[in-house]
Length: 185
Image 1 (tube, rainbow, N blue to C red):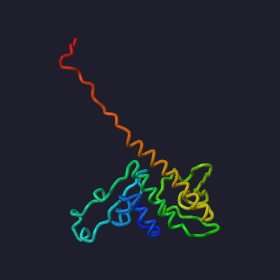
Image 2: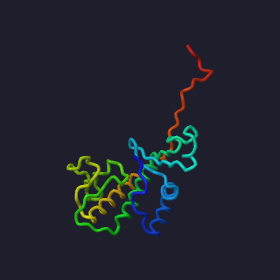
Image 3: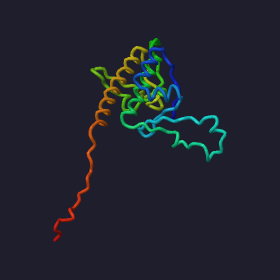
Image 4: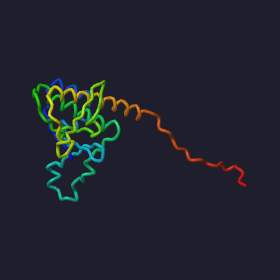
């Protein structure tokens, strides 16, 4: 399911830092207003049809596949970091003693709904909710921000690992060749 601008924009300094840290995602999500989502553990960006394309006959319009940018490896983790940073910024000055938070607005892999970072463990799944991954159990705003920061630290660690994996030299597969001068018996 694609998401659009579900959270607030934030301060000017935050937006400048976001643009510096994630220029590709900032340009496509904040400027060009691409939608984003996750399908089968793979994240993607989707361009909306322009007004001129909507007026064209359907065979001349770009298909969904043509408008989709698939984010694999570290780019998928970077999208999650980008979204968690925006979500943390939107909850920066909020205060609530006990509230259930909507996970539908947070683009994050389900494996991070339970985790541990430097002795702090968390679990945002609620067995009482019809869908365990939709609403969190009741918690304070401070605890929610602490959980979001732990998720962000875990994602940054995953991003570093994915980048290191991508930088490793790829093993070339050279097919075994027999020499034309080899003696065949």
